[in-house]
Image 1 (cartoon, rainbow, N blue to C red):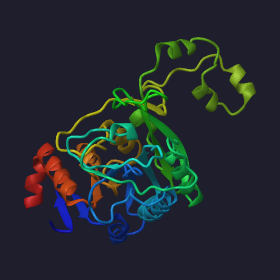
Image 2: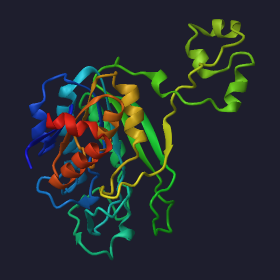
Image 3: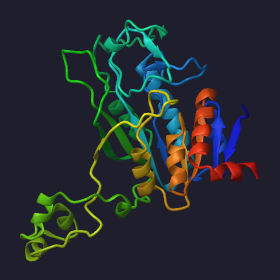
Length: 328
């Protein structure tokens, strides 16, 4: 497979993200949407893969290096949407990649008796067996320390989380999506992702002004009291930071496929029309697929040739016009 695969206006860069991002110019992409390999979750059996570092500290350091390069190629007014899940510390094996598996959180009790497994190398003196490692929080703080603005911690609440056999804690049913920027002011189209008002919320607009969004529009508390009524936004309320979404299985995809609604919301809010989206961990191509549907250009980086081929096939089959464009 070549190192660069054009698909119409999109491009897949095959190789190590730490090397391929260097091929992109400074300040060249409007929006980044990605879900990198989670720590100690799965062995893709590809040399150089991220996620199997000996310790969590090394994984975090690697991710900071990657996203430092992401920050370089992101425009000053750009946004970065980073989906990341957590892990439990264990000496149990790490699962091999499988196109039949579809999950986003991992518990060691699910995998100890399954075949095709790799012994974990994640030794870390600060964690005890069964400890929740707080990977998203540690990564977010490390990225802040490296210069990123952390603007939102969005909770992806899963409608149908993977079953877990544990009986000594609640089942894992959420992941984090961090909204990161390289400057305090940036492109964000709130109107593009507004959501319907809750009927109870609408009733508050008929009473003396109590609504938080209305308060934010008032210069001081005295004027808030003087204003008796504020009309709701006809496009809906501001997008909330809890996204309740179900899985969207893709038969050929690896287990970490996320719902198309995640990149859809991120791109509509964070990338202007005609802009360029980057996914440095393209996987099965969900971000590129959605970017094409929304009329944006996408650049994806993927280390695993199998998944790069999967992403190419998926984007071409979903958007047949691109096949002709790529052949011209």
